[in-house]
Image: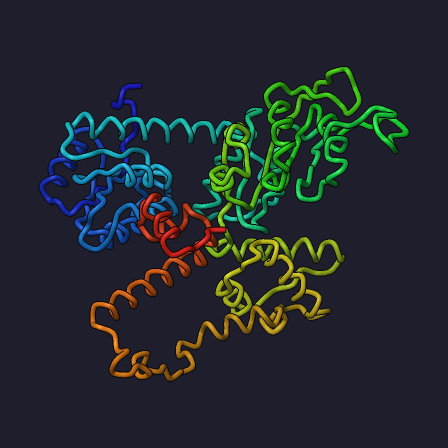
Amino acid sequence: MNNMTLPESNILIIDDDRTFCDMLALHLSYLNHKVTFALSLKEGLNKLNQVDFEVIYLDVRLPDGNGLLAIPVIKESRNSPEIIIVTGEGDPDGAELAINNGAWDYIEKPSSINEMTLPLIRALEYRKEKSQQRAAFNLDREEIVGSSSQIKACLDLVAEAAASDINVLISGETGTGKEVFTRVIHNNLRKSSALVTVDCAALPENLVESTLFGHVKGSFTGAIESTEGLIKQADGGTLFLDEIGELPLRLQKALLRVLQEHTFRPVGSKREEVSNFKLIAATNRNLQEMVNLGTFREDLFFRLKSLSIHLPPLRERSEDIKELVALFITKHCEAHKMDTKGYTPEFIKTLVSYNWPGNVRELKNAVETALNRAGRANTLFDIHLPVNIRSFVTRKSIRKEPSSEKSDPLSHFSTEQFPSFQEYRDEILENAEKQYLQNLLSIAEHNTKKALDISGLSRSWFYELLKKHGISNH
């Protein structure tokens, strides 16, 4: 494809080198693109709210922040632009972090104009083809509600997953809607066939093989008749392996063969059977960390994640809450044959201000609780919401924390015990470093990738610090 066939696009350059910005902007304007540049990260993020950019050239070291740490924010903006990192101080850890966070490419300065523009051409080609595919595939999104950039990005992947028999791995916190997304993929591809769910965390330990592969009569005590396993039941349909991270290691090898060959042998049988299923697996655990720890097979992990969909937590897409609330109210009122209820602005404001550790599932429960408490009333008030939600939001609105008197840590030392300045400073730094890591792991929910994104630490340095302070990331 020739770049001249591509439509005019909006390009943003975020770089504090004015000469570089002028040079690149001039060249891109010759290619019929509208080019804007910003000399700071803050200015660039402000421009994101004003224009829908297709591609952004982003420097790493900016006067007011690290460009790599801004990638997730930029990707979540309304047009989810492609990001090309340009830096004069490239490093392998930074390049890995950029790609893991969704950057299109990572380019070191100085580079030729062709090296600078080729990634742009390819990124625009990709976006054009993706747009055409989206238009050609009429996805029935059913109960996937929301118009946030995060959900739109997930829907693009759902459309891709529903257009072929590629294996799909859906990850995300508990309650983010992994089963809903699975059902939508299945219904858009194999609706007329069975969707068979396997709860890997609830498989009976002594009957795991029999449950998955089936068994023949007399193959073990209690096998009074031949039984078809869940994998065979999914033949022609979809096999959904929920909580795949809980599957015992001894079964992971057997499952890998099934995924590779789509053949299996029931317990006690001498004959291979075939099952033509689409595989969707889901987990709320970090499978890459489990691979590193040796508790999950690397070859199975690679087989599962042919296409990965990570569902964002509700707290990161609060703009979708109003739409979700409307859906839950409508479905509840229809099920109970009552007129649809309204709600006050404060009702939504309270819901938006909550942090939703249970995600969409918790929101649904909260709305249903409010509906039940409202009874025959026509309007939902925030007083109808669960008290834990209201108390959290109320406490959050009070800025002043209770005062507490802190004792001087040096006041109990005698003259002989009083430390030197160097000893005292080293101890404070050690304690602060350890406390920082503990707080980092807590806020990142022990997700290594998230912790690295937040802290800007390299993976090797991060693990070295954990080892130094005896901190476990489990």
